[in-house]
Image 1 (cartoon, rainbow, N blue to C red):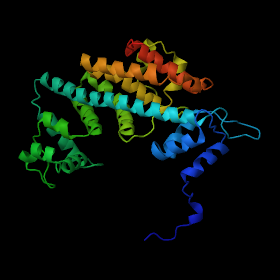
Image 2 (cartoon, rainbow, N blue to C red; image 1 turned 120 degrees about the vertical axis):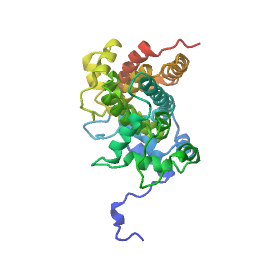
Image 3 (cartoon, rainbow, N blue to C red; image 1 turned 30 degrees about the vertical axis):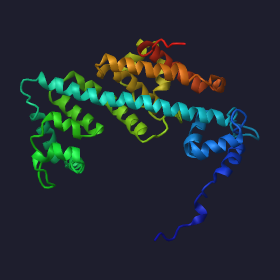
Image 4 (spheres, rainbow, N blue to C red; image 1 turned 45 degrees about the vertical axis):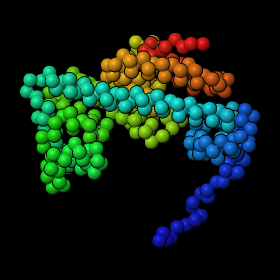
Length: 332
């Protein structure tokens, strides 16, 4: 039983009927989207927390009686952004699982070209390091053990006679890659490329940013909220700087946009997809999806954002990237 909770410090749960009046107090209008339609949308299609997270992409009055209230924001704009966000996550997730799949193929192809590698040696070295890691011992071992309860993986790994006290050994690379998570795959890729001093090690830090985005889209987290935050002050990867230069994006614009973590993650994903994925067919499909989204759905209600310099600037930034690397001529 939970005891000693001071109910005075807890915010009461807001009923749907209370949400619209509360938003109106923030100067959020209900002209493009009527109040009853907004209430129905919150009841049937999305939750208040997700929809209102996009309000941080709009400016507020900084002085006077309206300080803290929004200057030009209709509920329809928030609804529109939530739909765009959902469709953006679908495209990004497809791209990221393709990056994961083709990263595995890239590893297997690299293994074939190394004379001293048999597809077991590098995995044994990595698992030995994991087993004896001073800070996080057996982290990968434990992760694999949990997955072996799955019937698919049990069938694959039953031959290794796994038990919790035994060190894992002699798992072939082609099976090992299928049971580790994307984060573990990146860690292994870093170990593998460093051990054999491969040029591909330059992609490790880019992959880590892609993995952050993967975790967000896989859990249906909003990816287009808080786009004005400057929460990443680390120097961007030189590969990305050169990529953006090639797209015609100047230094000031690069520096400004890449200080936002989500914009950086999406940028890194757009860059890495064309580096890692080798299938022309998959690339064409992604070009089609991106073009439909970017030059179709995203600008469907462009009038909503006429006065939003932040969102217009971000659109122009990605437009340069997509124009150079992904744009497909769409049928009218």
